[in-house]
Image (cartoon, rainbow, N blue to C red):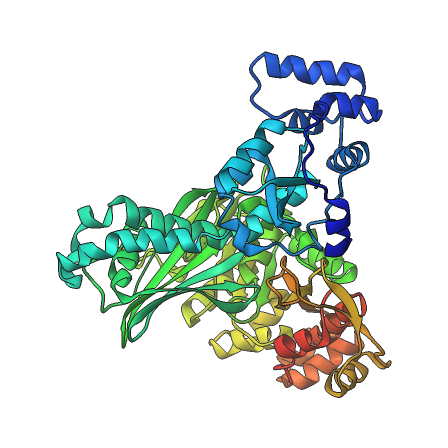
Amino acid sequence: MTEDTIREQTLPQTEQQPKALGRVLVEEKVISEEHLQAALELQKAGDPRRLGTLLIENGWLDPESLAMALSVHLNLPFIDLKRHAINRDLLEVVPEDFARRHHLIPLDIVHGAMAVVMEDPTDVQVIEELAALSGYPISPTVGTSNDIEDAIDLHYKAHREIEREVAEFIPVEGLLAAEELAAEEEALAQDPVVRAVDLILEQAVRDRASDIHLVPDHNTFRVRYRIDGILHDTLTLPKASHYPLISRIKILAGMNIAERRRPQDGQFSRIVEGEETFFRVATSDTTWGEMATVRVLGRSESILDIERLGMDQETMRAFRRLIQSPFGMVLVSGPTGSGKTTTLYAALNQLDHEHRNIMTIEDPVEYNFQGINQIQVNRAAEITFASGLRGVMRLDPDVIMVGEVRDTETAQAATQAALTGHLVLSSIHANDAPGAFYRLSHLGVERFLLTSAILGAISQRLVRRVCPHCVTMTRPTPEEREAYAAIMGEPLESYRMGEGCNYCGQTGYLGRTGVFELLVATEPIRHLFNEGASTDVLRAAAEKDGLVSMKQAGMMKVKQGITTPSEVIRNVYSIA
């Protein structure tokens, strides 16, 4: 529906009072009289939920049926918020708390009236209250509850509220020198500082950010979010807000706020939108002052399902077989930020927690899981990956996850554990799956030991997914066409891409998925590696055995319409 259609169909509110929502739904035969009465009885008994919410959550009605019935019965336009642009000026007119409380969002000004998308346009009291609040006559339209909630999350940003909170505590900086202010915990616990930091964290979770960068500049303080692997400038604040905000973050993470020259790290958790979310903090001094990076660790349930990682079915079946082995070593390789820890956790979740003793050594422990014994690296207590691994070996483990093999001592201890009847899962920094074998060799482990220990290695990258809300077909560039044909052996006439919309921040991408290659240590592969074959020879032999390279896996996702050629080229083609 176009905006012209909205103008044609959106009528000013008449003086005739519309029927109550329940009557409308019964007359349209969307719900039964019995279900209506049951919902009304729940409300009489003190249930604070709205009638529509009660009907939906009890399974008596679905959001789409509710919206379409109201649209037809009341002769009001149904608005698909995935496709319609919101007039951002109206977000200042209708406060976020009002929009959330009454399940509505302003759309645009039409014929001098404010068109508002509502879950329940029969609520005359809300319409009158909104008219008084905004100063506009209200033209109600209909939308689904899910779309309205998503639109509120998408469009109401905390930026202006953060700026207001910052403006409140900046004058304090005139009373204390910046150095003194940062050291005063009482000053840093004042409400505006606390609220500003909470809003920055909450907005990051809403925007699906993986990292928050708090960066001082010459005369400003920048807040940047990394979303789908790309950094975005989100806020530019006065320089005077630098020390209060950084210090508040450090207090939350249990760090020393008086120490600014040495790098520090810590972690904390907060309840965001009703769920516990974990944050990992690292700080370091820069030319313009101390900066902080906050890693936003996703909710545990979202990373437990191996089906959601993005592996193709054949790779997933082979990977499952590896991690079900009673002993040996499985390596996950890739650069920082490629999702290695997520893959390891998803693998652990596939294992039998009840009958196997599963232990991990991590730096830091990013997620806490029931049925898994997790150990945190603590260098002050002389608990490193290597020493922790030796300690774990005395605790009768069946499965051991080592957060990262990064030195000779850890590599040798992990290999010995794999050779003595334990299943060892670990991440390692290597460019590809064959490179993981050679990385352990470079760390000083004898090749004949590795050929006996390693079951296989999986390497991965993350690519952005095409936004489903603004997807369209486009023709490839010559570079994209050439890259696709070289890998797939067939021409690429067109592919799916996102045009850019409100839901994806005009980027055309929404979310990320993994691209994987799995090298299983078959007898021919073990023999070649033990004989000193190069990575190219090992890769060639593996491809003859059916190895699907990351380039192929990436281009397969292009063929399936999941991502774009440029995204595969950007993330995967660093591999020769």
